[in-house]
Length: 109
Image 1 (cartoon, rainbow, N blue to C red):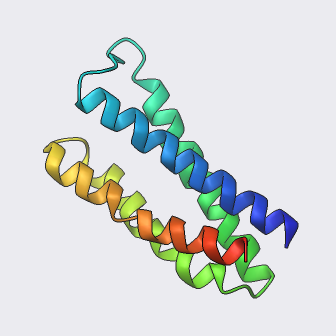
Image 2 (cartoon, rainbow, N blue to C red):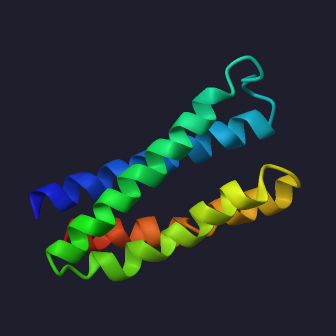
């Protein structure tokens, strides 16, 4: 369960970092116009580590799989819908939050 806990924690951390960066850019606290790849890189990292955590959870027959796997849908919608309009992008991004919270709660219990 140690690897699963690490993967779930890493996926939640990447998701949180990406949301924090996105919110900072939206609030104009941070300007990433010259380095947009950072946000995209965090998105790819979040997606990849979330997928790895889901695979590990399925292999271990952990209930984490059932609560973390639905996060894949909002992650897919983010890249499908794009960044505009910002309201939809924000809604899609925040839709994954409960999955990460529940995944962390189960992985760390």
